[in-house]
Image (spheres, rainbow, N blue to C red):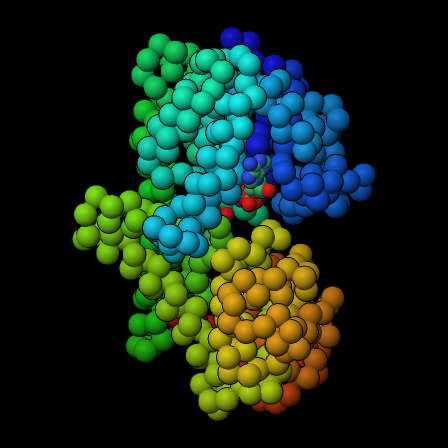
Length: 463
Ligand code: UDX
Ligand code: ADP
């Protein structure tokens, strides 16, 4: 089948950038991205390209080039479904906050709603592609809904997990390590796989396009994220040992990373990993293992989360302990709120938990992040339900520049590795702070010797 119309349900951090790149690389395909969130769609359509809702290096250029040509953003979900030959589902799959599997299983209600809507609207055969990370065997559930509630048309379900990392989404999409497509082994399933392979083959060498059965594809995505997160928890666990023994985690990571079997990526000790995927996917993996009574498997992976929570907590504790066991009414400046640099996404960011702990200790907190605003910061804290919105708002100041954020503060904590932090006038910042002036570098980003020369008391992770 010659594909010339596709749509994507969900205009988020995955759906938006992925479809923009497909539109750029496949000018012969009309790509429509739909979402029920009107505000988000309005932002994607904003005349000022700098106002698109997702910040990713290089993304606004691609959207600027393709929007209105063959890339469209709309709230008309039904029309998009009706028109498209391939429908990508890229809606959110958060951890369940209620009922069975609460706090662990992925909440599939948004996926199910999508499937029901597709079934209701589709008048001709469709290929439905799971883009969101999903538990193993979700494709089967989607297929059941589509086949049993549809208008008698044929659906082929493919799993095509997205491996892009935020902050590098565009380059990951343009030059991925691999594309994974899982589908049925039936002739119809293989035909559907071929249609999707042909789209990616417009810019990705076919050797990098891997096809598997649906369940292998679904489980591979969870496994990749679990392995990546496990590396961070492993290096973070050792960072605590380094702090006790006088070893330096940076040197240890350098030494083990040169072993080609281990490799040097993803060995940066930090205040803890965040983001929408790692915690959610591991909890999901743990839940699946438990549901098959594989308790040892579940416990093994759960430890990655336990370690990450410990790392965030001990970072906040260290600030309190170092500041003579109290931060009550002291001004603590947090530089960075996003879960990593080059994104405005804050989901599960370590900053939220560090701030929450410091607020419990009655600190006054001042925050500066180049891409995150006050509204988002307060919403993130509100979501934890530790205290009222008003109580958080009265203790948090947000600033539009780092120098105001640091003025008069007792300590600075670096929570995101934004490049610009490296180039600040640290002498000017030092002079504006209370003394002794502390820096807690949760990203091992700054130059220890330079800061010590200025007069800062500098503490990093793992040394
Ligand atoms: C991750 C996966 O990398 C990606 O393949 C998947 O599609 C989605 O989940 P993402 O969460 O966007 O991507 O960013 P990633 O670069 O993986 O970073 C996740 C977190 O780990 C961030 O908070 C980051 O700061 C932290 N991290 C990463 C470390 O603390 N140390 C490292 O060495 C690497
Ligand atoms: P991700 O990081 O996986 O892309 P996001 O939360 O950023 O996740 O984006 C998911 C998007 O999916 C949200 O903008 C949400 O409004 C949208 N969405 C959820 N359910 C539906 C639905 N039934 N129809 C259309 N859009 C939906």
